[in-house]
Image 1 (cartoon, rainbow, N blue to C red):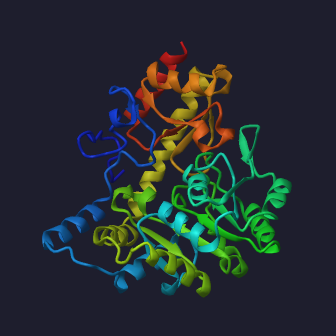
Image 2: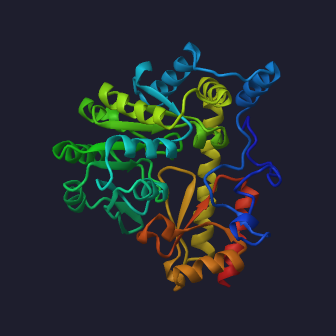
Image 3: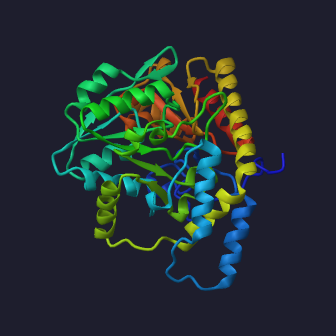
Length: 386
């Protein structure tokens, strides 16, 4: 491999929330594998671009130029066969920020918004903290895989104004198929429900699965959808606060921008622009090697559990670098499980219930780390259960 994913990089004392346990009431000696940023250095092309810009020495108000739009459009065309227009693009400080903006722009207080739990916890927060009504279409877990209860989905959609889709799904790792996406889209069209499609993990897909951009499946879907993307998960750029939000419908885009401006937001972070353009222009090979490495990590994790800890099972991910661990056979309550993970295994994972009631008995582990670190975590789990 051309790129190094094995070297362990010290992240303590770098203002990293991932490695700051005391402020989050965790023991100081825990191994952090929780929040979704990677323990890998960004691609050299990104480091070089940021270094060059830093040496310029001036960081005034900035806007994206033609080369930025070209890099973004080329990335989505080459990776997903999705033709985008410059006019569709709204740049925000992040996808979570865009979720809140879209919920406020397209619903009013009291309106119902549907999500599919267990799911990334800011989905629920964006609804509850804006005084909207939370609806849940609980995913069905059977024979080691999650699926959609479409009868319940349609019953819930009838009461909703907005649906937040997670694809690839965090934390359960599903990459929704064409038929699943089209069926959800048709139901939303039938009842006049708008869609926020969070596709931030779209680049982290394991073969033979393929990410399908939801709005690219049908022009009617594009007319009701806000597509949320960012280079942050793909290239480990979360701290630069930069996301690309695509809205094809002119009226929806105007409403979203109005909500954005009402928050006092304007020009994007120059380093976010620089890093995104560099990554999309020259980071493809780095990503391909990263995917090979992550696939190896997931295989190691799965094989280790099957060989040594049969009571903990990996829900095999089709996408994302987040491992969803089914720990229910340990016979512990969620509170007892989290305490054992923290105090006996000395690991810092995400407790399953934070993603919804379907997360009881589960833990989320970030597997985007050097293999030696992952092995250390697996050995710790083994000691915990022995």
